[in-house]
Image (cartoon, rainbow, N blue to C red; front, side, top):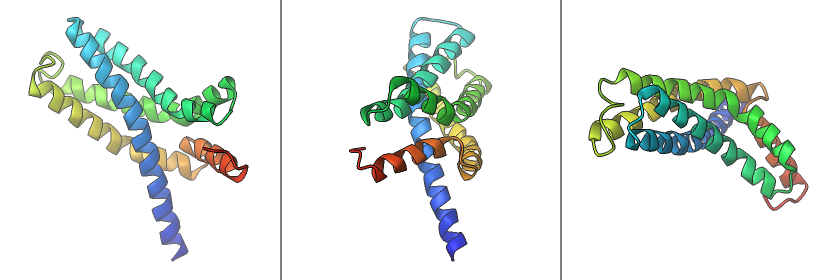
Length: 161
């Protein structure tokens, strides 16, 4: 019974961490796709902007709460880098590959359902692919486990996290 509970707990933590990462990635990805598409940029320029923004937002979603807890910027940035880099990288590779593989998705334009449907589908696929990667990392004390360890330390110390 203990094993089943720990599996559920690991899956719950992994789901939360993957959703957290997806949220930051999605904001950056959507913003990058909107900006690149609105400016009439090519696929690769738009994807480059989307990836950069996904990393910025992804790291920020982890770093800002750590900064609010009183952690120094360098430490918070280091934790965010360690916690999120693999997950964001996997998500970005997958969601951009899906966008490129869906015929016409990148050229569809902001008012076209094909663009938005493809982007939503790409983000769902990225979540599904990143989940087992994050689970593997967390089970080994890596990835978002680093952030969870920090949260636990702050909770034990009485921080208003």
